[in-house]
Length: 266
Image 1 (cartoon, rainbow, N blue to C red):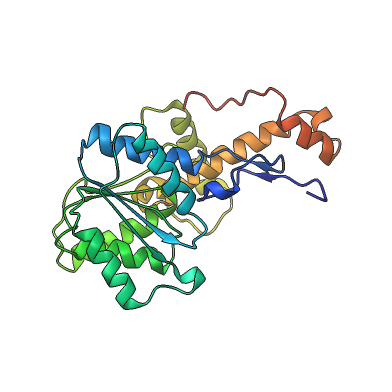
Image 2: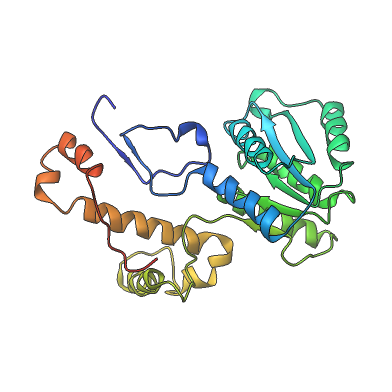
């Protein structure tokens, strides 16, 4: 803030940093919006009666989202069937007996779907693995925000490889932009053309296949490439006016004037 810099299109997994700050120009959905989307999916689409919630105490995010979840379901005359929460490793971590006791109490509620929040660290690996392997919770739907997408899918695949039953549709995560292989979105079709040309003729040496983003879309790489492309397109347009880039103050002020960014239809 002291130097008038702006963070353009930052990635965040916590609602804690999503308050008003002109030096952070967000393009992705608020984590709170992702949480509400998961809740709506569980209650309106999956139509579960017992919805559980998992988060780590003392983590950078989870607590604020839990309070939001409680308010949202109470407004529907509903309540969470169970909540699993112990001290995370960020603040020291819970002892094994404390963790196990809290987990037993949670698993005994036999949730039909569970929303999992937390940082993509070993804590999340531990409780996702526990949920998928405990007979009381193994059949429940696992719902997670985009920040945990890669971790959840990795742990799920490992659990299935280790003998856990594969249940199609068991895991759902939110996404904040279209997938790279989306054929219905005009903007994604434009992205595919631009990305193929870049991978083939852009001079980069890391990717050898011009269709890499399509082949690896399920592994999060393609989705991240779309996100980066959107950010780049918008930044290019944001820098397009001479009067906007004469100095940092002018550029920062211009971001919050009425704007329209064109990407074709999303």
